[in-house]
Length: 373
Image (cartoon, rainbow, N blue to C red):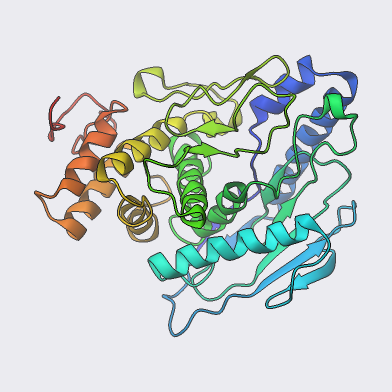
């Protein structure tokens, strides 16, 4: 049994909200400040009453998908009013149907590809609440359920920055994966383990989207949150796994601060040690190895990362630890001389981390050399 108090995970990073609070219009600033204040309150509440995450037993028998989507009706009471449940047809509320479908696509990938039965691997109900508060700019996993805001529908069209937060399937999968991490490695939400926590969510978020669209690694855009921004924003999404630091560059939102290499690692006390910033490094490592493996990224690269999360990683796993563990899993699955294990080596080398180095030495010790480098 492990206990953690970090289990409020919001998709919008605080640095983006802080930039809006400084550079937005009066209405935009007001919303950003309210969002930041609400996030602080969430963290305080969870610290005072931490959620206990218990390691779930392996799934046994057939999967048991059970989705329930509620509406908060622009209030804050959770879960709210039940609108749609498992097996019921679509309703006349787009956010409800998007939350239902996104949860289903996430469940299906975890079950059909990795034999994981829901978030806790024991058939846990997938509970979602839409229409949280009025014009709420965020989505989050609170340790027990998903919560989605409607974006900037309450602002004049020219000031709207965000569409509804159910509109991007990878955001749904990203946040639900925080639940999976809670029941597996339970990575501490600070510094490198926290950035890995975010990276695992980005990885499986985009894999759910790619699988839903039937895209190979080469066909995918590797953007987290594509479609979330309105046309008023100069950006393609929240993060780019292929090219961290390039997802957006906007006067109101600021510039994407993510590094894609250890030489640019950001040492900061903000954002729990930069968990939403430095996650760009393992994100790009996964992208590089998935591209080298080719085909559908969830089949090989995704399986390696899932087994690492589910069976090998611990609460304090670092980037170097993740590199060593993913390589060990690749060897176990595909062999010591396989192209897959070499792709893992090359992927981590591409972000300045040498597989086989000791913890704490980062990219200084190279026990395995990437092919062609």
